[in-house]
Length: 117
Image (cartoon, rainbow, N blue to C red; front, side, top):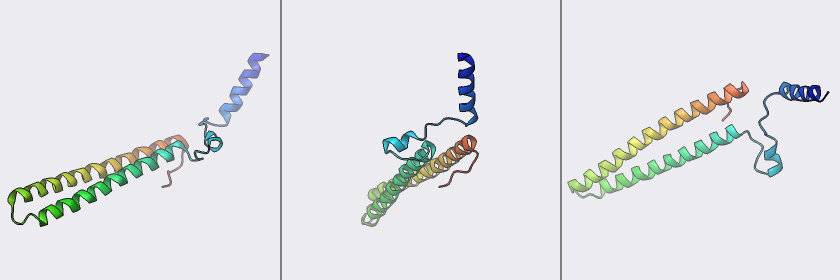
């Protein structure tokens, strides 16, 4: 009898779909969003901050270049900073594209709907 009760309880829970524990956020006050959406937002914010760092590096390198006053060593240093900033921007953009693709595909694979951002 106990066996049939357990089988009935588990089959009803399995029929409702995967249990993700999404209602716990409501009780803790931390939010009601899905964890995958939260992770995607965190990644977007982190990559946005890296983009801001690129902008600051570009302005700094441009300032150093403009104030070099013909000094070739200062111009070389400014070019190195600018080149490093461009490489960093390429890395940030590729990381953004990869993370957006991976999170979107994981969300689609687990829910069957597209990720809205």
